[in-house]
Length: 171
Image 1 (cartoon, rainbow, N blue to C red):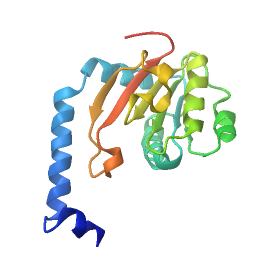
Image 2: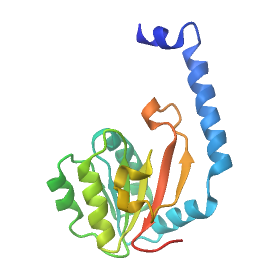
Image 3: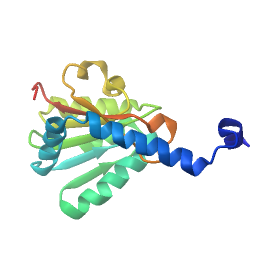
């Protein structure tokens, strides 16, 4: 099968667990604590929390939203795949809100457009993605990033980056 072709006689469970442990170690060594705290503070202080994640990111955004709803009343999870539907659900985003945008291969134009719109309203946008350009090249100067490992994640989700983007401000 495909697995034996890739791993040969290696134990798949040990291989995955050791790789994940290494990613977690690397994360602990490289996480910028101030950036992480800024992202947490943005979520804690938000009037409303919007979570965008379509296509391959919909499961992660749904999972994140599921648990945030235990802590906050105003959590809106947007996993529709069309740009029009995403924008309809973001129409009430304002300054004081925080938007968490998940974006992974195959990157969705709906997520990019949604994040851009939210940023234009003055909302805080936190991008969770594997590359800085996944939410559009204009974010490269407004983003702070650090590596986070995805335990047991498939290859495209390994080495995730979190970008904390505040409309026009640098932390």
